Length: 492
Ligand code: SF4
Image 1 (cartoon, rainbow, N blue to C red):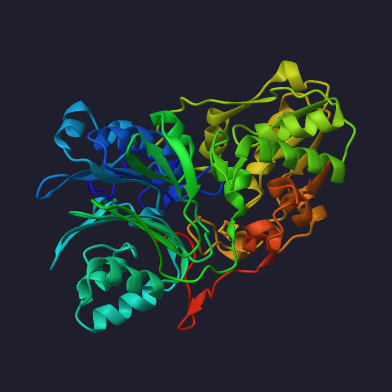
Image 2: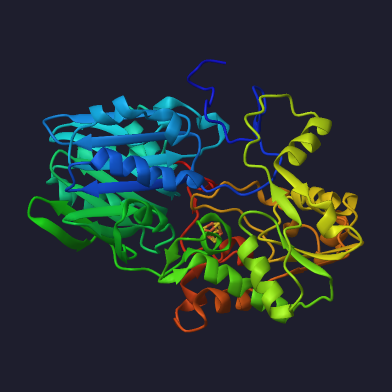
């Protein structure tokens, strides 16, 4: 295995097998990427470093920052966590007052430094850097057409198509970017940097989050507001579906490259991916998850002695469930944050060991108790079964599982790494069958209506509360097949 394909900052607790690639003993969904941009601050690289550090949960495989200041770009990208990729000297070498940065997770086949972002290009009008979060569903089709007409791609990342579309245009950069963005179908948040401009753009459905902030006179952009808190910036607003903000020495220009489609922010951002201290659509994520737990309790109460949440993402919902039911909330499960990297062969026995390395049941809390275990989703079912077993081995007399999302039945085409449809347990088993499979005493899922109610309080009036819920209801906000081909997951 060469250095280039060996992910040095492999997600802690994963197994890596040369033949099989990454194997996740937790059987969880993965966010694919996070982006952070700065326009007009002398410490652009340092701000990006701290911003990306706050977005580390969105991608742990590679990190990069590209800075514009002088005539040429300064940039550094590498495999690994943000703190491993950058040190004081590297940051000091990234001089300039405009930057875009990226953290990335990808499937193992794409674990190459050449795919680490920002992607950097030289073209007719100068330098271009591209950072994105999400997935362009029609990228394979566009790429095929571009290659047939002579384009030579440098990476296997489909993000590169936007650079080729811009480079082939005879229009000025802003018009070319508009034309390029309007050809893309999917869920994406783009940051584009040239020698004198920064563009921030969101897909026509606003599937992936992108928010603008201010720090003094500087403009900042981030996948999540938690990164603004870290650098002391103020959140201004979200980038709207189909919107494109252009920043140059004359200030910020609000443009639109496409009419806004049906608003459809990824529901899994609320349920699981985003940090609880982030806000989306004006709602704090911790508060939204607490409401999910409260609504869940109203929909499917079960009498028990303690409520516990699977750390970290389900703790807020477990607190909400406990508040609503008045059953005490307890830390029945503890996550070990210091498991280190485990480059070991994934035998079944070692996989089980891997789960125990990352998560433990607290015997003194659950022994002899009827436990309500709150989790955010069930993907293949193997993780849920292991966690239920952990609680039983620690002495729980009953384990009632409550999931704060509807059954996950369909793959994601918009940047979330999901298994094939036939590997998603809810696509081929009933709730009763899943309950048996995971060894639970009872199992209930949050209803779609309950999820919408918890996220926006039922006030927004948008179709489905302005959420994409396609992985639950198969109602995708965009076309998903091109030339008879469906490509889901992440290609950024
Ligand atoms: S399909 Fe599911 S995971 Fe993908 S964007 Fe829609 S809600 Fe999010």
